[in-house]
Length: 449
Ligand code: CTP
Image 1: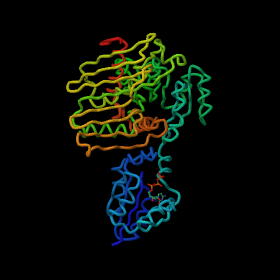
Image 2: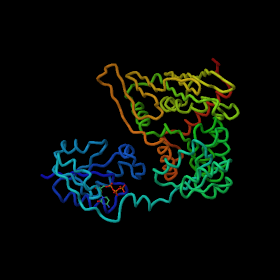
Image 3: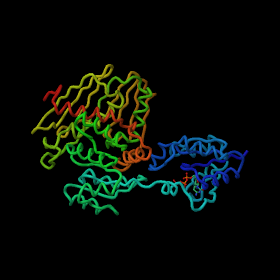
Image 4: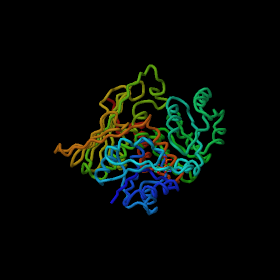
């Protein structure tokens, strides 16, 4: 029996795929098709795939040519599969000519003629009208956005706005086809959605206005600094049928999400303790906003939503008590430590703009613990550690670019699929973070050190 294997993403299955599978099957008796997993595609930068892995597997099965469908999940798997399944022929479309010659050492490599004039990329481009995006607030943070949005399909940045027109023009001049608007109304006229990267205290009003104008909103973290404001805005967004999402890049990072779901599924037992820390030493002489009490400066507002994320994602929003300890200077916290008590767990987080800490994340459970070294908020590696060290596992990932691409992709996906809440950062979790900020503002359970 001649066994053939072939691989692909098979997104939006088209005639080119069907022809390829038929040709591959005609080479022998038994065809195995490797379909890429969602995380494998994301890991290699393919962020625009429309169908999820189950849909893609079903589509390949429905062609009737595959005798077996397997999932391709890691680099190097092709060599393993060829040996494991005793493969006689590795077949792939001619667009890959030469790229898989290295497999000749293990099996016969055949490049099959590709069907001209069709591809998943083409179909994706034809079937979506891009979400038109406007950037509000064109400072340091927003400047990273265009390059990250570039690698995500389904959107186009068309306009910028800033109270300082020069900033808006400066950002617009760096991106083709983008217009700097003189007024926010002009920006609303040009777009379907906005990315807000203005100073913290202006978020509430900008978000509210944008929602009233019928725009979807992706707003930089912290979304707002009061729980009630967050609740009101999410309710308003749902009422107006638009998406409101907090831009917390760690929440959307593939490796961080994998860690969260693994822990939720019990790999370290019951979670009893989480310690998360993040510090960024800033020169308070050079930077105004971060150290200005009138502009919500300070460590907790600036950095707090990152360490709160694993705590709230894993243990929920129903903590029993939160104590805050801060070192203050000129009205802002240079360092804050928070201790959160849950019914069966205790957590602590540390944030510092004026104090340096070891920036790691440790999640301790009844069977083992997860260790994510600094900078854990850009998760690309973590370890699961146990009493029996032979059971320890290390996980490696890739963190692409500035990491904003993952949240942008999820935002577009929520818009296209009309999902008001993303499982990576639920609305109630954003509200809970705003409540923590508010507790700090009101100095409740607060002590200066
Ligand atoms: N293929 C083909 N003819 C086409 C498109 C794809 O023969 N017109 C083949 C590829 O060479 C590969 C298999 O189909 O062997 C699966 O390819 P995949 O990358 O999933 O399809 P594309 O349409 O090329 O996807 P994309 O545009 O995302 O690269």
